[in-house]
Length: 230
Image (cartoon, rainbow, N blue to C red; front, side, top):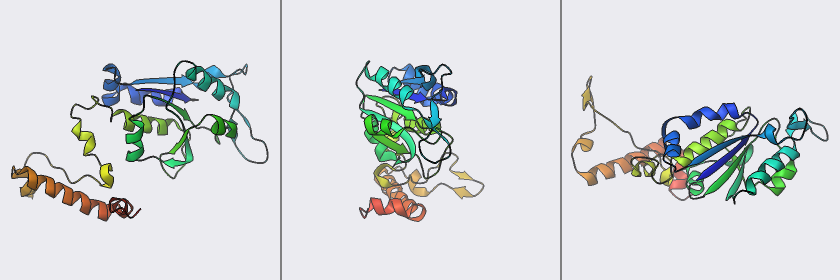
């Protein structure tokens, strides 16, 4: 998989991709992550990428010219499955969306900034708009990092134990069950006996039951999805 990220502030998202699982994915050749400074595509002598909006309204808007040039330059080199725009009014990102994107080959992520981008870019180039929550960030860089991390870790061969991703929270609309490690007893607190029984079926049944109970208690909205009510 190749992910190209277009941003006004590349320094913000360089670090997350140089460590841990995402770095190993790149070292293994399983993922390529390229960060592009939008200012490099500006034809303005001061490398400006924003301008005032038409009509009344506070704040600046990302201009059409540098974004168009950046996207067209990338598209001339390869085909892209999705061109994603990170924006507070996009569709809410979740594990289901991460699973879908992990099946793609090439992605562009355009990081929103200022008050947003010229609508003509959204109408012409953007194929998917994504939000990471009902709140506003200074820019879309952190959202792009979240999306990239969630997607890349699902690629075959990235995790040493590929079944690990399948048991993460939100797979099948359930939260993960409680987990424990050694020692079996610590200051009077004991690991549930069933987890020490060695009976795989009992353990699996217990984990599934606990996942349902936790989801129902902590995320009733997610529990409704599990029941198929949404």
